[in-house]
Image (cartoon, rainbow, N blue to C red; front, side, top):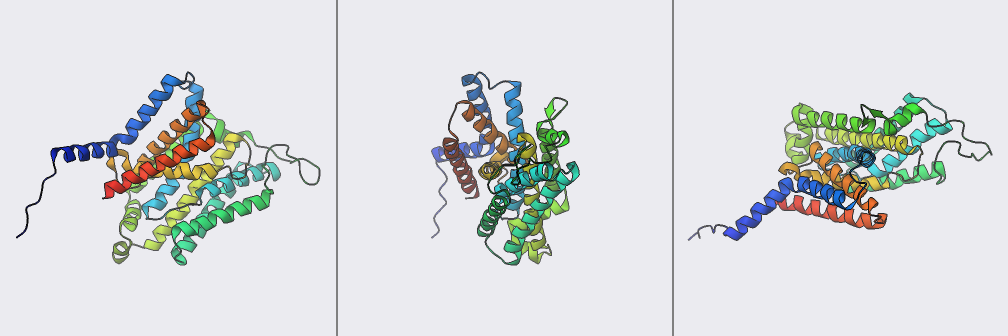
Length: 337
């Protein structure tokens, strides 16, 4: 004879209710708590200059994380975004300093390289059916090798010495530096760019048919294929978009620091991945989404800024970032169960 179902005890219900509340609102509460803590303990935290720095750094992380979000939506993953950021940084700096190009070419070349990286990833994953982690990991190392070979490990900057004994003929032009350093109406231009991309991506994924097809592709690939959705095409689109946004983040990074630094984008991989996975829990979405990714970037940006003000070493910050990522993954896993 079948036994009657046992209802959850009041204490278990309370625990589940608390976990559900934290899953939906924990990110927002964490952001407020971190801001309050650093505002109390650090005198320079609540200043215009500091918040401007936070917003500029968040803008780069968000651009990279949005690309990662697209790859997660189709049930993939892109490990090559950090090296793509570095590649775009080197490419834009080389176009300006070494080849004296104007703004159009300086923006076009890195973006085309980012798209090329996305196409390479999709070729390995979609066509050759390699696991996404292994394929993008291989791409990451290949891109690092390319930029190290090209630069011989040196940064690219104004008036840099050349092997022939001369100096570089070009320099970072004001129109390019404005992207990462300029302001409109008192707001950093890079932040306005980030907000535009966030709004556009959110509207695209939420209110358009192609955006919904991205989600359907990731939720059940075989069912989507049987429904007539060109699954491989949308997976390819996702990796191309990921490479594009990583390259855009590299352009903003180069214009902000005014140099092309080898491996400058390495740290953005962990930050972007953490922001994207934190976004799963924002408002209980339970899936990759652009608005959640933005809040994840805000949490990471504020936290790292405050830790830097407290003189916490960068290697210790990596421990904290890793712990946050583990927490985000654990919350996501618990919600799915």
